[in-house]
Each structure stands twice: as C-alpha cells, then as structure tokens.
Image (cartoon, rainbow, N blue to C red; front, top):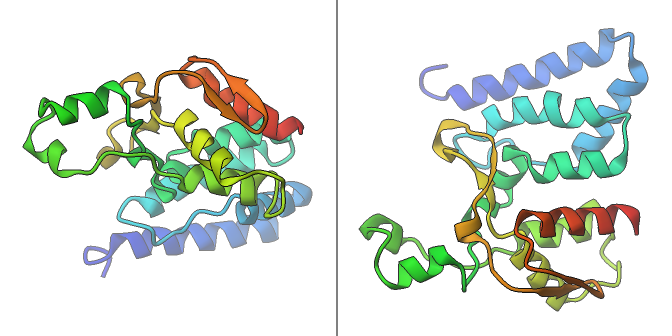
Length: 203
C-alpha cells in the first residue's frame, strides 16, 4: 500500500504524530496555538503529489516554530513556505510584462514551457487578504487583489518537483510600480512582497 500511495502514508503519519505531540507535550499552549494557526493558515493535504511532504516541513518549521511569536513573522514564514506556494498555485504566477513572459512570446523558453500558459494567478493574493489578514469585508477591492498578485509574481519554489525551498525569481516578476491598498509600491522585486506583508500585519 505504501508503494501504491505513499502520500497517504506520509499524511497519516503526520496526523498521528501531531495528535501524540498534542496529548503528551509539556508545552500545551504551544500545541494549542499550533493547531489554531494550522487551521488559520490552512493548506490542503491532498492538493497534489508533493503536498504531504511539504506539509511535514510546514507544520514543524513554519507554524510550530512561530506559533507563539509575532504575527508578522508567521505571516512571512507562511508566505515563503513551499506548502503555501504550492497549495495556492503561486509558483504558476508570472507577470505579463516580465522577462519570462517576453521570452515565452518570443518562443525562447522551449516547446514545453511554451505549452504552459503564463499569467498572473490571484489565489494567494486573495487568500492573503480574505482569510489570513483583513477578512472578507476588509475594505480591499478586486483591483487590490490584482495589484497584490502582481507584487507577488516571482515568489516560488526552487526545483518544485524535488521539494525545494522558497526562491524569488526576478525573471517572473512584474516590473514597474504598483498601487495597492492605498499605497504605492516601487519597482523593488522581492521587497515589494515584504512591504505588503508588513502593511497587512500592522494594519
């Protein structure tokens, strides 16, 4: 069975070890807050073939490690987590005016890359504001969602098919200034995303 569906085995072991830790831990507040933040910053175990492996790291090195710390640190950790990036398809988000998009239009990325549509994916931007920070009626607009999605283009996973870590790819990032949530964000690459996270964490 393990050879047929190893993801289910890993997922089951994750749940068992989590329950055992919660029951026997001498750090009960940490256990409770870990469960709370795992629910708040939810990722789906059955999203795809790598989700279970990403979740093991996510549960222990992202959520548990920041469960009793500052909210902004936790927000940044989840934003840069391969589990979250994979779950919300952030790795597929490419700026329409980025170098990667231009190379695709010119046919310079190869046949396999050309077959994949390039564009902005709004999943993470929407969930970041709707569920992680501001709430459903948090005062943001669809334009804010689109602009925040542009800001986070380039945030992805290094060697995603091998379980790599977070990486910022400037070739996939939408260049130029953006206006979101009443603030102007300069052409700062990865730092634009950090500015958004700081703004949302301190609003």
